[in-house]
Length: 223
Image 1 (cartoon, rainbow, N blue to C red):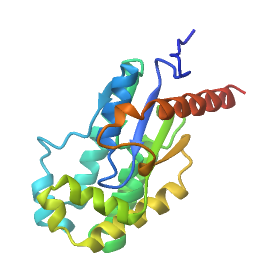
Image 2: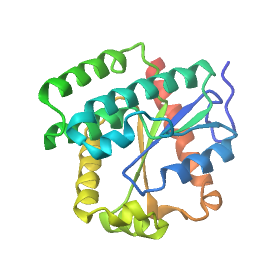
Image 3: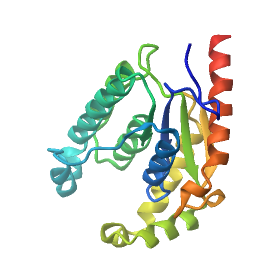
């Protein structure tokens, strides 16, 4: 018998936070993990052998970088479920193919052959009944102006130096991706509906919504 907390969230639940750059995925991940006493899973960028090479030559290294991310995220997903769940995950494995690899293909920085190979590998590894999908994907959303304001407020120089057109393209790609995503249950949260700078004070209504979503989806799967 799987135990649940007072919000109806099972102790073995796996919840993934998704959304474009700057919406507060890491902040939400920590807030939910602290409230639920869950473990966290964050993207690992240190010791990535392709990242620096990629930024110096997109066309040469985009395929290698995406394969590396796919392998690392796949291993992390296995680790999460081998622990028995109870995780909040910052960014999903699905965004790699739906957003980033496709963007490289569309912009010509990944060849059709490389993109086809990557997509076939992704589908064989992830889009199968044997891959442990999250109980819930929480999509953080807001207007483009809201997202840009968040990027400016956190003051990262690399983000400040990036052309606004890049962030608009990323924003549009995320919106298109989530509107067509149906691999696991999705719950949308507008970033203006809670206090990003002090999320622990407004996390309770979010936890109640999470519990309702997971309970409904698990009943549907059993049925």
